[in-house]
Length: 442
Image (tube, rainbow, N blue to C red):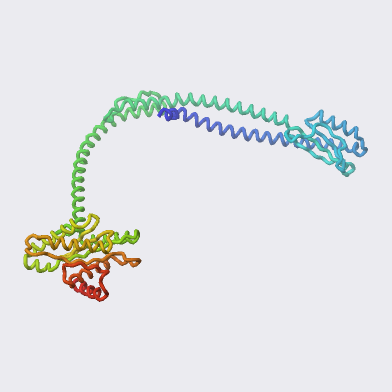
């Protein structure tokens, strides 16, 4: 928090920083162009001076070269290197031999400008003049000009920034600070403005303060009316929210009840056929992906019509409820029990192989046969058909697996009832016979 407060600039600091940035960029750009132009002018003048000097000297050397006056050539070169900015001079013959040389040869570490001029006599080239101009003095002058210019610009920037800082502090920041402090100190908890802004100047800030002070009473009066309306609206909103909450809760309970009624059997409380189909579809997809084996058990109460005819439909309903309770208690928690309709139930035994599914079905059959049903004076038996899926690479739909379990169920019916049949143990003739019975009763 303390580090963040250090870098939180006020209006004065921000304005000064912006001004400094603008001045620095503007003056820096102007200075760069000025210095660059001066450098170009000096270099251009230096080049022109060197070329003119080389041309004049080459004309002066023409007679001496033709006459092979080496002494005069050397004296002239020595005089040139002493009296000008030239640090090096050399005369070459047409064959490239050095006829005279004066001064220090150019060094790669120093700044030189080389000039080459042909020496012509009677329109024939009789030699070549090489002059080396030492740019050290020129560079020093340019550096001095840069330093002087930068110093002047820095002083100008500081003076302008100081003047801008003082002007901003008095003309803008001071009245803004007064207005800000007045507003912060004059607003109470209810939002009423308790004090006026103490600015009496004739500028824009004074006009703003005067207009705000005039509006203070109007704002306070409007605030009072608004608070009254807000209180009334809050009371209505609270009441509406309470009613909406109650309605939402009731709607949620109704939706849950509708969902339960849509997926469960009202008599036994078990899931219905629609829920079973969706659940088995999901389990079939997981079984195919993970290589699991599941089993479906189709169960039908034997001679259930006789129970209804002998003891009445109320007793028959009680038998259905007690059979549902036996199935729920006997099967595992991971298994799914549903009532398909009438006296038929279907179960999904997850991760159950063929042998294990037949053991579970036989246990159910025995539990039901041994149970003393309310209002019934004889044993109630059931017939069960089983199918295990998926089998190898062949994967069929959920409805077909349920149908195969029904086929096995009807095989148990035709085989004497009160028994368990697995679809995989049936031969083709029995399967076809069971399919016809299933279609006739379906």
